[in-house]
Length: 280
Ligand code: SAM
Image (cartoon, rainbow, N blue to C red):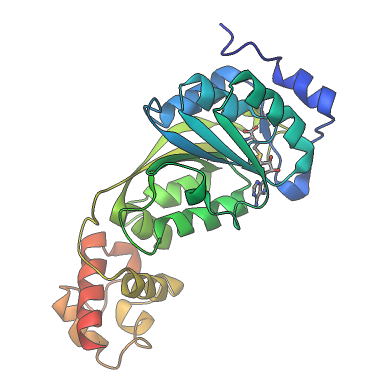
């Protein structure tokens, strides 16, 4: 069954001349059943505003609207996509606002009721940068309730990684400290037009009302960045630049100086950040 009365995406792309541009990371999703499935992975949108970054020709936008999002704010950098998006806006009166611009520079707070959901199939470099920004707002809870984001499979695995795994690092700690993060869908390259070189996955992150363990966000970020910057080194060596008495702080956090960052669970990184904050 069609999710809406709008034309198929291939026709939209042909009519508006939306040949994919590599520089903008354009790998489009043309299967509306798939975009509806991603929209459903965003959870119940019935009473929610949604920020969509990089709508392109609007496949996911249509999924979000068909799934009942109250309002979608779609931020797109490529002006060629705007006429196609305006056709969707006309089919869903009052529910789609399209903004032309760079998502890294736009503040959605003026356009949406909070907390809003975020959904995006983004170029991978922009996606990681936006994820880190969404995870490190000035205060918590953030303006958003959940993030449903397409990533390169390898990045998705870094977000949900557990201690002890090779992919466990800064992204896992930042994500898991204040959200529940799960991979909810895997997509082969052939799901996209044109197909990218690697597989992709959708990650769903739900904001927790409060962090899992207390810590000052800036201090935690510093400690974690330093620890994983030299992930093969023992903590004693990796962190020695942070404080002359790092061994005492490691002991306070219940950590051995010979452990490596890869093995340290979130709880102990938070304990270390607290020990560090107490002595600054
Ligand atoms: N969401 C569409 C889909 O699933 O078919 C398009 C996905 S495509 C991977 C990424 C989209 O993000 C493109 O339309 C591209 O023009 C847009 N884009 C790239 N960089 C952007 C930025 N900094 N801000 C907003 N949109 C951006």
